[in-house]
Amino acid sequence: MPDHEIKKVDEIDRKLLFNSPNQQKTKNILPLSIIYNRSNADLKSVLLNYWHILNINPELRNVFSNKPTIAFCKDKNIKQIIGGNAITNDKKEI
Image (spheres, rainbow, N blue to C red):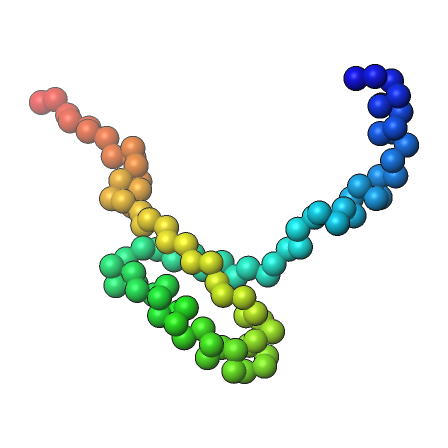
């Protein structure tokens, strides 16, 4: 890179670089993370269909301004429940 380009970059005020108009504004996102189960698979559609009820109350409207982001995570499997490799085969010879 030519020296005059490096000098031009060095002369830019750092504060101006951090307050760029191209920066995205952060949203208040409400994450809802639940363990996937067949019984709660329709939870997302029910919650989003009735979201307007939370907006009736002015206090709740301020707290829950945006619809939640719903994420399903998998439940523990049997190996994780019983402790993974904790079970060993201790056969005693007679």
